[in-house]
Length: 136
Image (cartoon, rainbow, N blue to C red; front, side, top):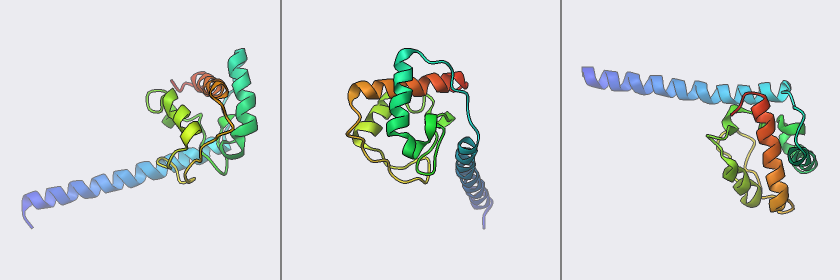
């Protein structure tokens, strides 16, 4: 094996190890978020309406106050910070569903019972709790 082939193979192995570690680390942080609570601050009326809507509609999978559950990931998590998953990502997930791509909970189905106004209050709730916990 030539010198360059060795370094390419070594680099590929290091990258594969990093990819495995980072994926398992995200799964661990999902379990940690599920097991550890974040602070829910006092909320503005729109965000409080979103909290009520979230806990009525979404908590079955995503846990009470978006802290994560057995059926869905925590939304109070760095993966869902606005710069990575903007508000439109939430709108699309609610209206059209989304394929699993960060977690192993499976695909999220569309939520046709959640209308546009309710969606906006849910987003306001999630963003307020994220911001209160340093996820911006």
